[in-house]
Amino acid sequence: MKRISFIVLSLLFILAACKTEKSVNAVTYSGGSEELYRYQWSLTELNGKEQKNTGAKLIFTPGASIKVAGNSGCNNLNGTMELADNHVLKFSPLAMTRMACPEPNIEQPFMEALKLTTHWSTSGKALTLYNGSTPVAKFTAIEGNPGSPSDLNGTWELEYISGPRIAFEGLYPEKKPSIIFDGSTEYKGNTSCNGMGGKFTANANTIKLNPPITTMMACPGEGEQTFLRTLDTVDAWVIDGGKLVLKSRGVDVMRFARK
Image (cartoon, rainbow, N blue to C red; front, side):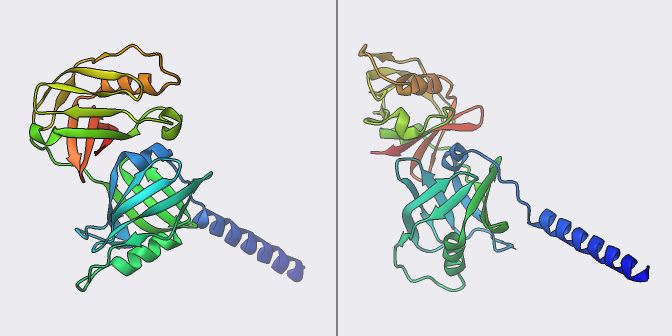
């Protein structure tokens, strides 16, 4: 009888241990891939240690080959990465500048964390990279600073747009939308299909783009309408890391690269 009780207790202990291990190791990954592209990401934690003002950051750009760029805390980095189902993420070997880094710096452990990354998850303006179920790096979204309206001047090409479930390259397989500011009160550009132009007003952080007049060529797909519909919601802007970010109610809805 004592032997049977001992066996039963042993089995219960093993089952409890297994249940606890499963609970500890379980990770619920969240967020859509559009969240990755929405912000630049500043490092806040590395291998469980808080990081402040290191300059380490990442920015992801959608495409047939997903691009990643940023800084290791010392050197600039760029390359590509792969996304798969279940929030799987794999960085390809990243190219880096070769500037000598003063001590102390986090470049080596930061790059090692990227190499070990297998999964990702976002929640609001927070990004976590995992090796299996273990967090290896945490980031927060970089908020840009208000600028001068003259900072808008130039030609900008769209590289991110929020909302649609269609992949960015699917929306714009041949030509990406662009917008041009020339120092006047008017903007112009291209919807990816038709030329466009209209008036706008802007100050240090707000902007209102009046609905543009466009040429009338018939356009395949949903790219043009998605662009125009999103442009109509824009109410704020920042230049962040050399990119033009247009916002709607505090949310980044479009990002452009200077051409």
